[in-house]
Amino acid sequence: MTISGLCLRFASRSCQLYGGKFAGPSWRAFGSSAVRNSSVKSGGPLPTIAQQIDALYAEQPPIPEYRAREGEPTEVKRARLLFQSRKRGMLENGLLLSSFADRFLAELDDKQLDTYDTLINLPTNDWDIYYWISGLRPPPEDFQSDVMTMLQNFVKNEKKESRVRQPDLKEPVLS
View 1 (tube, rainbow, N blue to C red):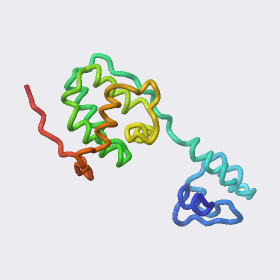
View 2 (cartoon, one colour):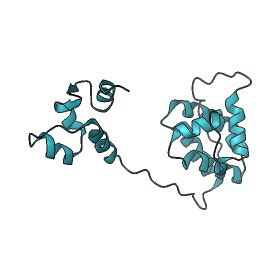
View 3 (cartoon, rainbow, N blue to C red):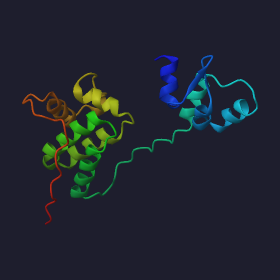
View 4 (cartoon, rainbow, N blue to C red):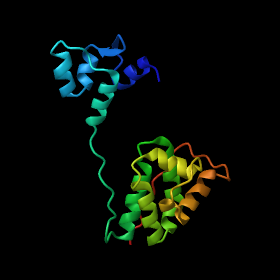
């Protein structure tokens, strides 16, 4: 990526470059206060791009650690997994996982539901999940299971079904 690409990606449209460094109010709005206060306000040199990127990542909130839910009723778990399959934050996984959940979630037993729960919630990077289920990268041993095989076969889409939108939600069956 070029420096101007980094500038536009991490700062804003109004970002200005000056000698390979960010300049102007866009940096002040996005950088860490320690770097801003020491360099920009004191009239010192502007921070380097690497320092600015490090400052941006330092301000990211931590990702909560995955904890399996003990004693969760099966129907509640299915409803939660359906929601989590639909709301991925990444369109590709949202389409694939929501379609898979719509088709297979009701058929999975408790052990398979736990495996699916771990698969979609333990990895912190949705791209890893995408690469594993699409077969672009082999899944780690910990994630190799019958559910992973079902997902990989589903993603192959041998019947050539249209999966350009998430399936409609169904009314819950109350017993």
